[in-house]
Image (tube, rainbow, N blue to C red; front, side, top):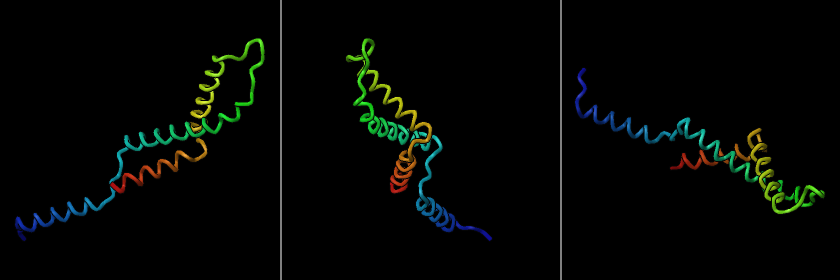
Length: 107
């Protein structure tokens, strides 16, 4: 049985339409970048939630106080947030990643 050019064009067009109907699956590199972005978001969120815990703590004399300690405390809280997010966090990164994947499927 011979296939005509018209049949091949129809099957190619049908294959293209079916391929366009399938959801776009992100590449592994894209998923890794999404995971990193979601984890960074969770780290920022967690550090913002940790800041009030440290506001009432005053530095002891003779070694504490001043602008340098305020700067150090800010950086320390940011690192706490990153560490918490990296070790599993509280699940925000997973939810954010799912939503970002859903947004990509729509496009």
